[in-house]
Image (tube, rainbow, N blue to C red; front, side):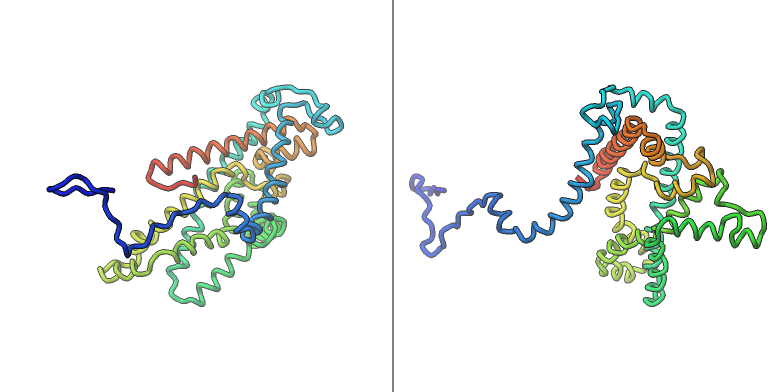
Length: 321
């Protein structure tokens, strides 16, 4: 750096004698940074091994979708058939039935089940009594820890043909009604998981600065206005993130839940892609067609996540990547 005066040429600028010399930043290699934080990275190892063993390594089995696979011949001995398994899927009426039921249930879950934790979190946040709030939280959390076998047994004892309501009214059997079965599936999912889903939204509400509510109250904003203009906007980033992540598994609508109830309502109402893969692949031995259906479901989920993430960024959101 140099300076120039009106009377003379440029001369180098002199550094103040008392000023400290600039400190040069030394670049640390990636290997040294990892070694320096090695104890922190050890906490990542169990989770990384879990996904490696149970998520990434099994992806190699998708090669079965392009083979006439036989468990006796293995991957190397099974002949390649190209896209014949995918062609068979599109002409199989059972696949079309399973896909239709999957899309209907997924759409109903997106409309009713996804907003339910948000509504419950807002409702519990509005309660003034801390004791009542904790009691309600405990009650709505409990069904999440029950298995689907117990959940369906409880619903059968209440809404089934020999259940409580049937004994009171007579001739009432909602559990075996194929016409309302899809709504029943969504209601069971909401009852089981709505309490657990509120945990993330409670954390998001707790992260909203309290001075915003105080300033709004001073300006005369009521409880509804504070929720509309402060709480809901504070939940939008978290809700957007969860919505994008849920779209990746939107075609996974509940394997065990539907498998247990399929004998009561029939395959036309309860057959979805996951149960189709189980019956045709695991029980029927048609591994190629079952794998092709599962691979197609994964591709659709990936496309939905990428599209939703791009759409969120266009609307001004952050997305997930």
